[in-house]
Length: 226
Image 1 (cartoon, rainbow, N blue to C red):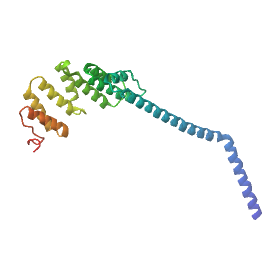
Image 2 (image 1 turned 135 degrees about the vertical axis):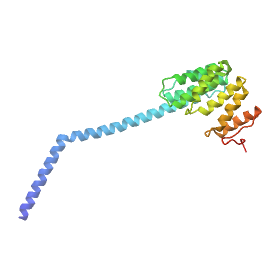
Image 3 (image 1 turned 90 degrees about the horizontal axis):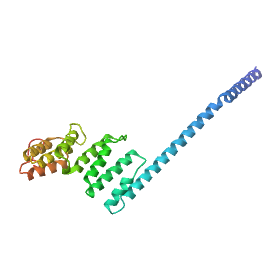
Image 4 (image 1 turned 90 degrees about the vertical axis):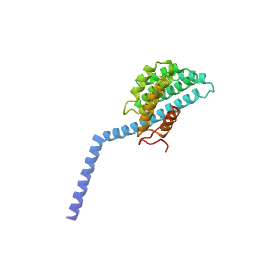
């Protein structure tokens, strides 16, 4: 019985082995294909990462090279010609271009550059467009009618907009520019009441109110700074 059981076990094991080898011969290519696919995907991902890193390095080098010269006009020319492979990097380059255009007194050109960011179809975070729109208004200066600047600032000052408080500060300055000191002070006082006002903005608003001969108040109606 012992020899018979041993023989049966050996035969059973041999049958199982034959079946396993048969399955491997029939379906083994699937496993091989899966391994090749995994290895290939990993290699492709590594290539993409390396290419992205190289592109980022090239873009950084190009930006550094463009602003390396000590002459602002040369920086404007270099940045004007700079085209990057990344949309977000191009936004940074255009922001830098507008900054240096302002430096050499080209406010209108800087505003156009910034408006290009606002209206471009780039897939970028909306805050970039908000910042560009805000800076575009500042770049326009008195060359642009106050009514046009006010319209743009009122859009940015709407509740919930990320630059609302800064836009409201500029609206107060615009009101002052138009000669209405009383309304400007009222706008600044209202700005001080906002719970989200930053320390820097609070200080600027308070100093301007004092310069206009009034007393600033904080969010609870007391004299600011007391």
